[in-house]
Length: 366
Image (cartoon, rainbow, N blue to C red; front, side):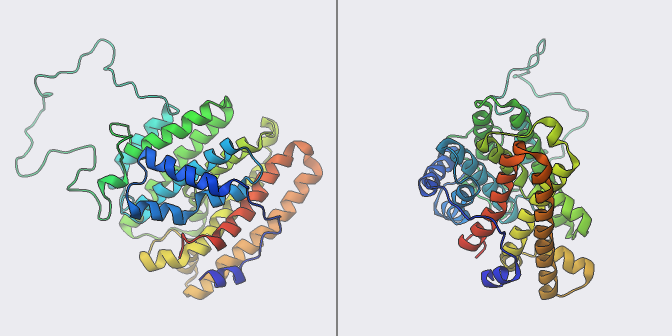
């Protein structure tokens, strides 16, 4: 399928580069994921290796410090693990299945990665000798309700070791929560509060959008094109990745420039292009493993009534037309934006090129 993807898509006309430390950072990030408990055993490790998080980060940030490259790589590793347990392992099969994990991860984000305060509220004590009163008895024919996924309700394909390792026991959200807290702390330590707040906000939107995906899977619903385009900007995890790329590149446009409608439109289009490129390269794998509705090809096929091949060509046309439009918008910003926008635009150029090159080279969608 890769050869068809490459022939259908225009190649982003930007310089292709790769950080010299990419391979070393790949090994370090895998060890970080193992320490956090994100991967245990050969299957999870092999799946993360196929994702090529460092390959994508090294191409998106080819000239940044090792620490910044590691941070972006670790975030991408976390996003890949989260996507895989939702899409492939069944955690995202229904909102009720996913919600306890999302709630725990939102708690981590609300605290910006700080340790949870487990003490009871002031002036109150937690009873230890008797259960809390209840207005009615729990029927003996069914188990008491629970706020967490237990061994009997775990979706098929999800094992305890897929979510929690020895370093993450007791952490909200298990291994996913422990790793997310570590990422937040590392960003907080760089003393860029604006970027930390932006990252937290974007990750919160990402997590809530996963519940939207889960609802669609549960009801076997294919969203409309406009709805999908909007929600894909959140489910793709591109915005938090761009935020860490902006952090790595250093110089950012000021708040007035950031809210310029032309800058916002360019940013949205960059996110669209990264997500659509991903949809095209991942389409065959997603259809072979499970008929997931969250792909631009599937959405276009359903809305237009076209067959698979025609819908794929239409989606490729969306990418190609979007790339042409991006170049026009970018040229206008370069002409009128001044040097303050240079790093910002360079980061988005790098991401467009990196996504294309990474998609061609890695085995994630084979």
